[in-house]
Image (cartoon, rainbow, N blue to C red; front, side, top):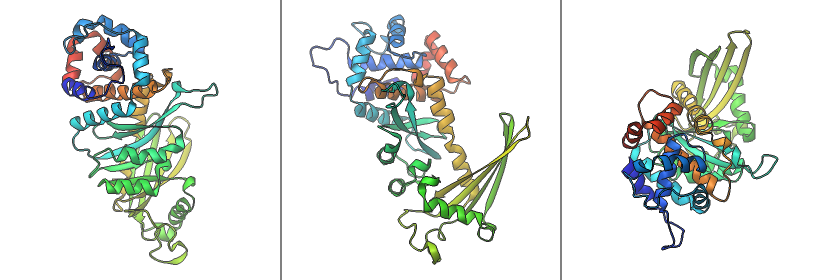
Length: 375
């Protein structure tokens, strides 16, 4: 994996003036990658750790002038083209995971530490694609605001080999253009509906609220227990022909233009707190290009939440991403791409340790660090 990693980052153009470079770009990127694998949080941590591990690093690259100062890391990352680094990441992931299977969850995350203003606004937003089954980040795109996810998601999806996968997105991404892109990439979709979808949300809700219509719907129920509560999730599905107006009536022509739309679905979650006995009910609505199979759609929706637990949570808790104050120019975006390099590497290791403990072991144990680079 190290050779592949160095191959892909070796193709990134160095914006600095040739002949005036002391520290090669691939050495700076490789040192950052190793630092993040070993629990470094910022460029000061990365420089300190790599100075201590310089002889080990020289197994892979010359590092003739040693390790640069933290300020050099900051300058390089602030001006480095993030698109080039994203392309290198996508190529590297493609070499690791040639064929994407199962659910690909797409969701956005704010890097709170990168906020530009005292009121907390202006933070960098990053949309990521997460292969739930493989446990890998497939790609990411930066956006200026939450609403810009609508334009960033199709750009991200066009870079991924999605044939045969199921793409899940929250209500922000429930757009006709995004459905077009997913189907064009040879994938299916399960898209969430909320009030921002207006009449589409209203009509799907009206279907499932009508006992005569929804009564015969295929249904699947699953009960789980954990975190001090019992949760019963019931998924009901129906063909979308009624929604598309093929039966006439007030829905005629109302929701045309959804490429591949085949199914509407409702998931009702009933949660009971074991301690207090209090029960709450939540209903969520979806549209999908999949056949009306409640078990398949329920499993896809369930898998979607792994992007929160296994990606966003890990970035915040294990890599302390929200605490990092890097924000000058492109530095925050380039650093978060490097975190995803490190996260994928740690995820691919099969040893039964938490990611946090893998990082600690990598910092303390050279053999384990080498194993991470070759797994």
